[in-house]
Length: 223
Image (cartoon, rainbow, N blue to C red; front, side, top):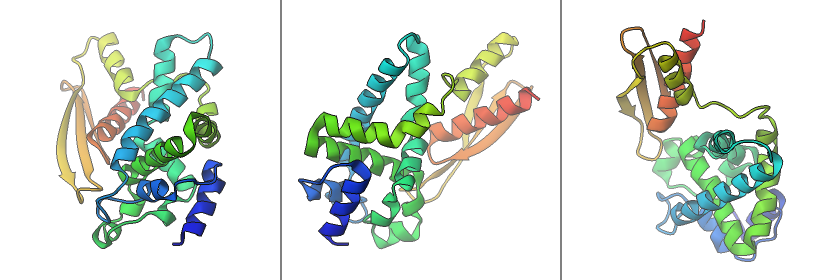
């Protein structure tokens, strides 16, 4: 892929002409391809994204309590949401992956795509500053934010509250399996509430699998 093609895509998707094309190249480079990869930019972009989403929520929901805004924030900056946005803008076609990582499906991994999306935000912030990053985040996250009619309750918190309200033991989570390559692991988690009920689910991280398992158990209990 030429610099001109990448530059045109960055301008179209992030709304700014790249000044330092190398930063965006690193943001799209997996560790299997080169030592200069997206990891450091992902670290920065994660913090920039969190700040910009928090700022946006503070403006939009000016009468909402801190707890409700925290729930909205946590739902919007998860790896799966970042990965979904990466897919929406066509990031998989621009990834730079080693052969083994590509063969293992890294181009469709939520872990990889979520990190790449945050790295792109980090690269944009370094290249053009907070104003450009704010514009890109608000444009790309708009549908996800405005689809929240009310502050979402995290499934693990909701399950904990159900157990307390029904005088049951707190939920207990166990990782029962881990498979897949290092860059795209699959965790299987089982959650139980005493001997009352249990459910299992998979995810690309332990946290994601626990969340899915909690949601599955809640669905059982609320039937």
